[in-house]
Image 1 (spheres, rainbow, N blue to C red):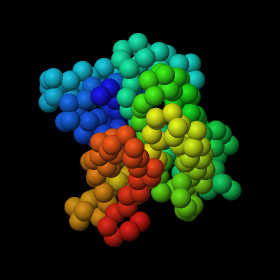
Image 2: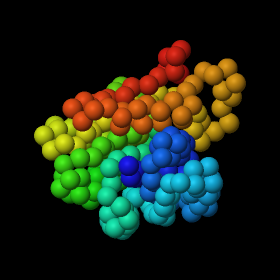
Image 3: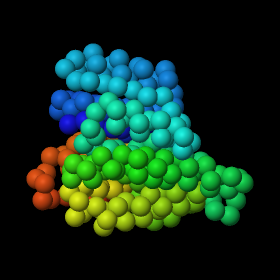
Length: 232
């Protein structure tokens, strides 16, 4: 299969790329950071020499850059799977967030997926096949202290996913919403996970890959993963 992964240079995106590559699937990765994205490409190609790994540098919070990336994807290969993983986090409650934070969170966490999906969808609809994954968060299921704007943006992505699922179920296209709990990515900084308190990115990645391996008549609509000991 041909897999598109946004934010594919680190964390959950890179782990998902590794998991798909291990199964022999071709990759198209996008991120803003050219150095880390090139490193991801080199590492994947060295470990999995039989697959194609293409990359594209872009800030997907900018709609024109989304269009450019989508064009490259469609020109390079027919997309089978789209993993909308790109996003970001700015701390702050709704009542005290800095002016402009909500717009930044919506651009990074919602509009990236919204615009890229709409650009890729016609090719999937024409083929009557495809699988879209939207990386939400448990913050899209319930509010929490200090994450108001982030949570709102993930609620928006969750609503988008549900509507997509409804619209596309008769067109042969699957939609899966992923809600990870605490996972050891860069956003956790130097967190000491020596006691294995929180999840690792490969936990989420393996669930995503597994969801693509079902029969055509089955779909995993939602993947909710939390640390065994619960949320922090």
